[in-house]
Amino acid sequence: MAENQTIRRLGAGVRTAAIDEGLRAYMNRVYALMSIAMIVTGMVAYVVGSDLKSAVSGQPTLILSPEILQFMFASGFRWVIMLSPLAVVFLFSATINRMAQSTAQMVFWLFAGLVGLSLSTIFAVYTGMSIAQTFFVTAIAFAGLSLWGYTTKRDISGWGSFLIMGVIGLIAASLINIFVASAALHFAVSVLGVLIFAGLTAYDTQRIKNTYLQMAGSGNTEWLEKSAIMGALSLYLDFINMFVFLLQFLGQRE
Image 1: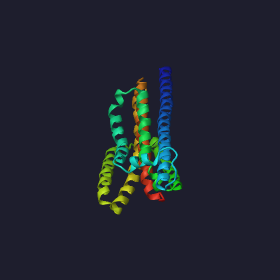
Image 2: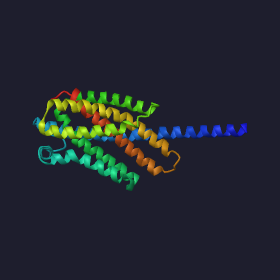
Image 3: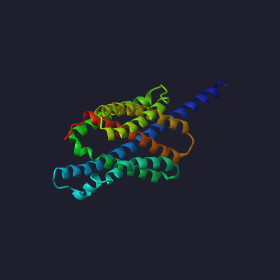
Image 4: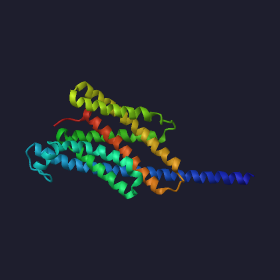
């Protein structure tokens, strides 16, 4: 009897170690996918934003001509640039289960590029130094919040509904402020945006971790790969939005 109990304990320990190792590999995969998406976004935003800044100041552009930039950002097409990432992310979330893993990954990179295109105007509005400083602050805050969400023993799954309601409220308030142009409302949206996406960073990290633990041992490797992509997308959106809202506080305009 004692030997059987020892064997069971050893077996449980081996399974726990395997799950922990698998979880670390899974989270590393999530963060790697997110990091690549951030690089894609940053490269597209910098290249297009640099040309836009040059065109605005009357200097020669490197890649895109002033005529193309004017069409992209000074005509109705700018709404396509602004809204296409939102359309892609909703379509992606709805159809990922029918996609191959490689296709889902390519759509993720495409989405990251579209976000970079929509963010390129910040290089014509804010100084490069303030953008870099805000990115650094966001990276530190994100790392701390994500680490807390991963390591905490507290169940924060109840935050989800409140945070999602907060995001919906942010979108509604931002749309309203396009027409009323209220400085007070803009400030309130920025403050709440930072707080909401800070909370979502911790919440999403714990959710991604728990999703793996629930599916560990299922043998469905393709599902886990797609789940890692969706997890990376969630954290990527948290980072980008926190960066944008912080930039409204810390960014210095040209």
